[in-house]
Length: 92
Image 1 (spheres, rainbow, N blue to C red):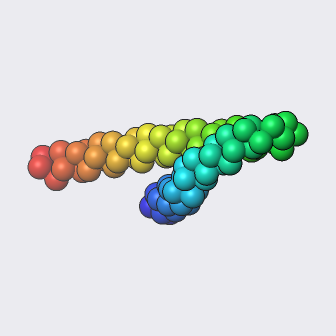
Image 2: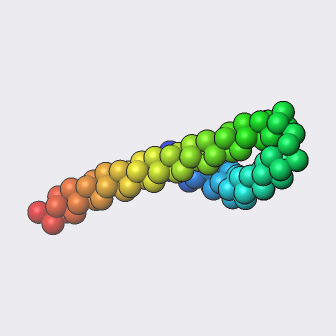
């Protein structure tokens, strides 16, 4: 049971990271385009780098969230199997 609490805590933390990361991606992209129009190549390159990092963080957050969902599903399946075995023994 403690592992499930940790998984749900992890999912909550990843959800917070995604909630702040996804809007940040759009904001950085908008600033990046403004810098490209101003022909400030050094700053535009830095913003492209930041935008790339934000996109990677979003992808990693999705991967962690998917993995946590898979582990939770697996845990629920194992618990259901154990419950079925107990019910079989009690029924017999």
